[in-house]
Length: 71
Image (cartoon, rainbow, N blue to C red):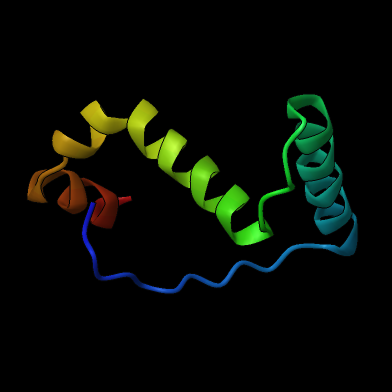
């Protein structure tokens, strides 16, 4: 992982934020640990998604971008 970081801003509805907070609290209660921050929770989701789709990320090239422009 790179030491440099970039900030991403995500806009969520109030209900989505409430759901995320409930998920975080439920995970903490089940694990008997302190709740993680919302930022850490979202970061983990993004990293897991990147890991799941790693093959498609590596296979990306300029020809794929050209295909998008034609649509």
